Length: 346
Image (cartoon, rainbow, N blue to C red; front, side):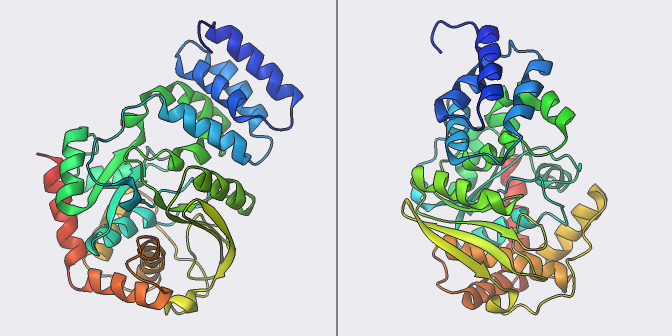
């Protein structure tokens, strides 16, 4: 939209959204460019997002959104090849038990994976960013520090609001809507370090295919898009998990994972989860140090195992779970957590 008027462009985008069941990548990109200009009122942004959110986002819509979002930032200038970098961020929008994706990311890094974990402020107040901050990590660390963290310990945390500040113009509209929008599906696919290996949990089974198609289009080396049968955006220890695998830019097909494949005993129900930030940080520490066992630990292990397969650190679910278990029980995960907290504050 060169030499355009953002307000007029947004008005036009609303008309297009009213008239079309789905949008092209360009139409989404044009609308987001107007939003990211900072000149659009929240009411107009909310109107457009509600129109677009009447259906599960298509691959074209997600791809257009990712491209538009990436145009607003400067990526982390790491020398590590994108083909080696992993992300475990999910879309959110599903019930939350504990900070599974973040602790899983640390487990993967403790097994010599390289993880640039994306995350944002959480609607619950005890998501990845809040929990890591409460543990002492500087989640606002500059890109130069992130580069050092990736090089020295294979882990950094990429706060979305820091790397994609223009997205803040949609924050109030998203909050007013209160349910997942197009932005939820865009965020995990716009990794600031350019990660091409991913585990992406999604809030709906209908979103599996569109997200997988976008990962393939963006050249993912290896990825799994997952949604559990009991409604979570992560691997389940109490039910089957639906997945689509992407390998070297190609969608490979559908998979159904069962806990038993990972050497995990099936639980009668999902872990009860945490209720507040204090609960979240305490449980995170206890799980990272190997103090706590049971369903919560199994949940971390099964999700970390899938990430280790994405990282090509293990070729099958059971051996991957074994690696994850050893990383925690040996103390490597807890030691790594202390190291990344220290490095983030330098």
